[in-house]
Image: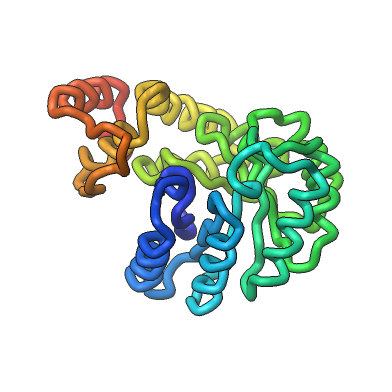
Length: 256
């Protein structure tokens, strides 16, 4: 586990005020104390907020920034989205990561090829489980550091050429995620697949629930995440007990 991705979707970036996001990034930088790499997500609903978050990130000792597509929606076409990333790449003193996501209104491979030519764009996060497209991007964009998005298919990403991965479940099961990565790197695909299937047993219990339910997994292993942002409803005590029992059955706590 090599670092922290701050204020992505799991960090509720879509709903948090800019000032809160700044405080979160500052807190991570302080607690990290130079040990792991830090990537700050600066995507927001309005471009002026993106600029403000980049300017703030420029004042901190971090390693990269990233952004979902502009406005986090499919409002903008490919040319407009490429221009968005070109602009934030100019504003940022840190390397920039783009996204291929369902919110991207563009042909993914052509988009990645265009992104690959922009100065200060370091990589791309692939958040769609289309590994044919993934493989073409890895092949056609040799300068990009490509990161796998879907937690349930880390191994698919690695086999297709991913350099690493960013995901929600790794907050709860970092050791298991690292076992998948290291087993693959060591050529032990059987063990990598076993660990992927083990992780997916837990992921299956969280799918279909709101963000607070996912954060309940962290609470169950001793990390108080506080309350999620309205209108997300807090998980009830009954739901927490039920989740704990189900996680125990699939061996979740054995992997902490």
